Image 1 (cartoon, one colour):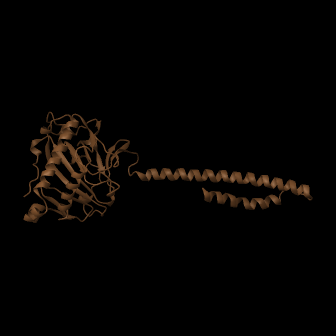
Image 2 (cartoon, helix red, strand yellow):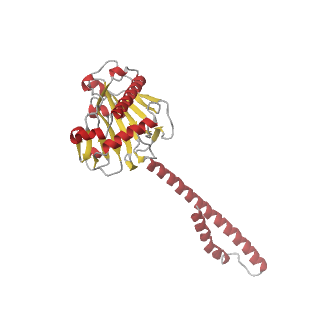
Image 3 (cartoon, helix red, strand yellow):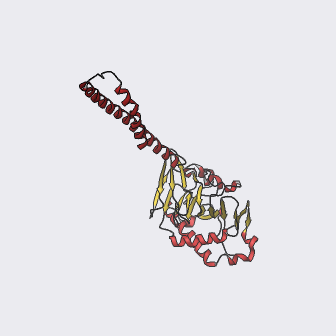
Length: 327
């Protein structure tokens, strides 16, 4: 705005000279006074016109800048934040119509979703427990890690990212595992899993005994390193029920804080017309039915490191897995 004002003032300079040589200038003091008055009035009007134009141009530029910032501020257009990192949520649940994905699988009465939706809570796992769980992930992932930006650690199957591949950490490291994890670590892991399972059952009106832990259930560590293989490309939209088949309910326990430990990396439900976003917070649990009603993705992490656990459940006992055991 100030630059436009300076340009408008400078533009008035040549016009003052032109007015002095213009019509109406005559000999004598009166003529010079009248001419001076006309010049002064003309200069003032000219400056006012130029200032008005400058103001309109500056305002348009400012509005355009705000609109541009708004578009750049969201990777996918219109976004509603369901859970801000700065707020502590007791319970938040949104019901959505179920997709037909469950019809192509065997249904289990009292478990297969008939009520679908998504929830967020900060009241199931404490931040202190989340920090302890994160240290388990950090110790395990210190044994390996992907060459790309996304690494996983599955305590159930033993799968661990290592370079561009995966190894079974129990076989690969053998008895050294006893120096990395403790029985207390695994007990905390089981306790956290059980509380999340009970919260999901409560939200969807089913019995927690009808739900079974299923694979893959794993820790994830994501940073801004460029992807080296397709396993590192975590940001693609997907539907868990379509991708894995066994999933009926999905949950994530976040172990680090958005905008404090990392940038980007928000969880995004991709709904028609807009996106619904969850900002991770240590101890926060988000959960949802696994069908197409909850198409989702994770934003790319731009800086820092994002830790979380994906814990998945099935209604089919044939696809159930047990809790991890320290070998």
